Length: 209
Image (cartoon, rainbow, N blue to C red; front, side, top):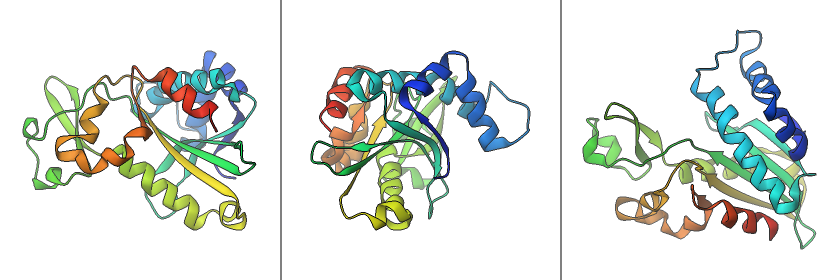
């Protein structure tokens, strides 16, 4: 399997010494010098330990987890995929999309072309009142789930494989903005988004698998 494979507990331990983010950098960038200011590196450094602690607290620390798995048919990589078996004996994959977003902006706060008014795009604040346009995270995990189901030979070859998806935004206090108003079409998937106040909620969800 492509990506970087660990057990959850081992990955969590390797986060403490920055061994894991350094290894992921090498996986992505080869021998290029590590740039600790890079947004992706900061995500590995800041978001992964939080996620791994929640997974471990759910009693799943011995399970395998793969990082940066290529999403065939898209331009992206899956931040993490937890690999296990659910209570029904089915092989289970849980895709995690991680975001460091602390706030969701309003469309009228951004001076961009009309593409922002498609509910697949989100205004994300960066600094000094500036915003960038990013893909809606629920759209991302939908694409990643479709990619696994369509292209992963292991998933296609096993009849009893359950693929789940989770958006984990550990810094965000207003995740409801992603499922209401102009994003209300995503409300049906509201149970897939977890923000700053939802750690225990995510832990319970994972424990129920």
